[in-house]
Image 1 (cartoon, chains in turn red, purple):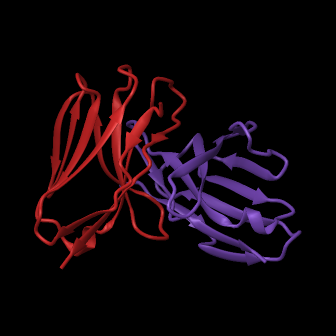
Image 2 (cartoon, rainbow over the protein chains, first blue to last red; image 1 turned 180 degrees about the horizontal axis):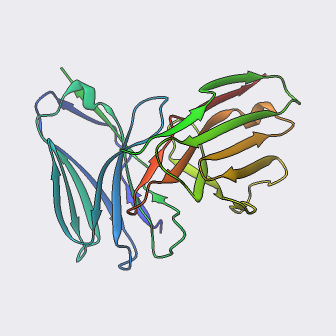
Length: 112
Length: 114
């Protein structure tokens, strides 16, 4: 079992839709979770960072962590064509090395 | 947010030659940087952890003599692909910790070996 699982999609939605992107993780000791957005042929861009459980909101983006079910989510409200990208969830894992463990990435297409 | 810069963005080299990619943290000091490789439609694969002033730590299966990493200062790490071959063609990305448990990535460097 991979430490972080993410459905690769692709996910296609119409403009204005609410998008839900999800990951599951295997180790309850994981504490820090991040969402990155990666446009084609570019490096990942940090979108959201959360610690432990709960929600965090930033503009149209909301990150949610449910530690009881080991489930993390990223919600995008009022999705725009410019949101079309690959979204990667990541965690530091249980070690303190700074290494990130990534999900496979979900490719999102927002159609105008 | 913190900025990590990579150079060059694109490089084409002949088979058998070496190519160097630079990774700089522009507005913070990074004692640790990370080098990744990414194949099309796949996630990032960690190659090595670059530690300022000491040897890099390579992931299993990564040839340290082929992928030379130097982290000579708190703002610069370099990856040198030695004796490059077409199978080394890939997207190479570096990252660095900006403090506060956040990791920032560079824009990536596309290497094509012909």
